[in-house]
Amino acid sequence: MCGIIGGICRNNITPILIDGLKKLEYRGYDSAGIIVLTKNNKFNRSRSVGKINNLEQKIKNKKTTFESKIGIAHNRWATHGEPSNRNAHPHICNNVISVVHNGIIENFAKLKAKQKKKGYKFTSDTDTEVIVHEIHEYLQSEKNLVKAVQKAVKNFEGSYGIGVISNQYPNQVVAVKNNSPLIIGIGKDGNFIASDQMALINVTKKFIYLKDGDIANIGIDSISIFDKNCNPIKRQTKISKLKSGQISLGNYKHYMQKEIFEQPQAIQDTLESRITKKSVLASAFGYQAEKIFSKIKHIQIIACGTSYNAGLVAKYWLEGIAKISTNVEVASEYRYRNPIIFDDTLFIFISQSGETADTLAAIKTVKKLDKKIYTLSICNCAESSLTRESKLTFLTHAGPEIGVASTKAFTTQLASLALLTVVIGKCHNKISKQQEAKIVDGLNKLPGLISKTLKQEEQIKQLAKTFKNKFNAIFIGRGSMHAIAMEGALKLKEISYIHAEAYPAGELKHGPIALIDKDTPVIAIAPKNDLLDKLKSNLQEVKSRGSKMIVFEDEKSQITKMQNMTIIPTTTNLGVITAPIIFTIPLQLLSYHVALIKKTNVDQPRNLAKSVTVE
Ligand code: F6R
Figure 1 (cartoon, helix red, strand yellow):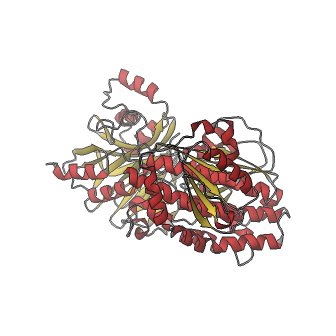
Figure 2: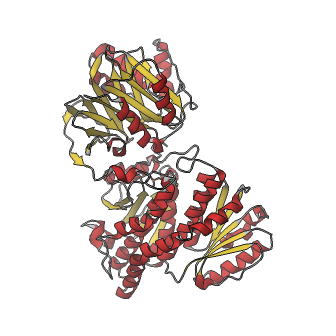
Figure 3: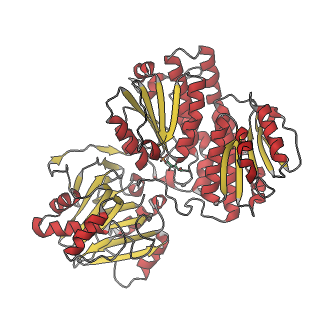
């Protein structure tokens, strides 16, 4: 998490850095800071707690000028040390070097003790401050900023994307990447670094995606890249397809709202050129996909948060339709245990950002195993670290997702996993042509069905009012709808701060039912399927405890209205693949409108960040 930006250019860099910080705000928003070199090579720094607007205002109110051609800036998501001015980046050492950092220096305590002995003074509680002192120390002997940075980073354990400037070297910005995202933007009037291309899209569309271990030396008209031993290396320049309009709010109040309403298009874009009227194209997963999928005997899905919930839905499809044994696990657990891994396992990593530290660590771990395994990532960011690590990649074409709460990324992940189920099922002769045609027909109808479901917004908005004084909620569903209930509960808790839990409906009686009272609404998802009668019985159990119930049902489910129950006919006659995707929509709308009522910061909920690039 945290976002960094920096650069050197012919014009004033400060507006570029501030604009970039705003675009990076999704990565962290508890404090921010900027440092530039003034004409007489003095550091001018400003730091502020809270949003970028606070920092911008502070700069405007400062007597000293921030007009400069070189600078670095930072958005913070606190790990070591509370959000405060003193802990905000950039950090400075002896008025010579300044650093911004995204990541964690795990061995900072040891380095700090060593540096303290050498007389370095610490002015913050952050792990980052050891970076700036370490570089300063090497600069005394090396007299070369790139070499000093290169020597210093050899002593760091952990993850880092770092930007460095020095008043002794006023014509260069040095950047290093290791397990944290970092890109170089090549502009007409200068060159830049940032955690993500979105931060620089108003300045350039030409980018270099650095690899782990790369060190870059950036001047106004020059870019040199070195490996960890300072040998020059070449990295490809790529032209981004991102448009600046894609990341503006348009007529929407929040990015989350915009992204919920973009889902019909996002699904259509994800399916485009990957399906015909009746079938799924196996080549969509890469030219080797069919060969690999035919060999696999097991699937292990690894992901975090919402992406993990998408994996849980896919387990029902992959086992139920493609008939292949599938496990799903959160990356933060998987990476640290010693799981039993069979040869011919396909590892599927699901991630919106492709930069989630735990998911990346998991893929790196499994790739080191002495086993016959294959890797596939399902990801929304083409040039992410995850796509670079995996053998096969399938891109969800959701477009940039800015709201911290994931919405369109989730439904496009589900659409992608549906395609995968069909392709694997075909490779194993488990799906007939008719079955495939039926699934594809459902997928083709999805954009229209989602648009129809979105029309229920007004009704859901009214329903959301009943949550005004609620502090707990329970979501229930059976089969793959349990995973959708989990996603609904995750959305509600992360943006409205209501404590929400999800249970398989049949599990309530084994404990959670004790939580149910008149102040704990129960939200049930009721598609018309084989488990509907079981769910109806579970609703009776809830009714007897006096809870308010909200049921999103298939019109054909015909749930009998009971006291304290609101029934929302959401859709009708859906198949196993389309149902989970469609039932997600009202849950997203519900959490969005409850958050509005609770007056929380919808797009940037407390304590969260969009891209979790730290452990
Ligand atoms: C929840 C949410 C998070 C992410 C999780 C994984 O709305 O957005 O739970 O899903 O941090 O992120 P990615 O998918 O980028 O790996």
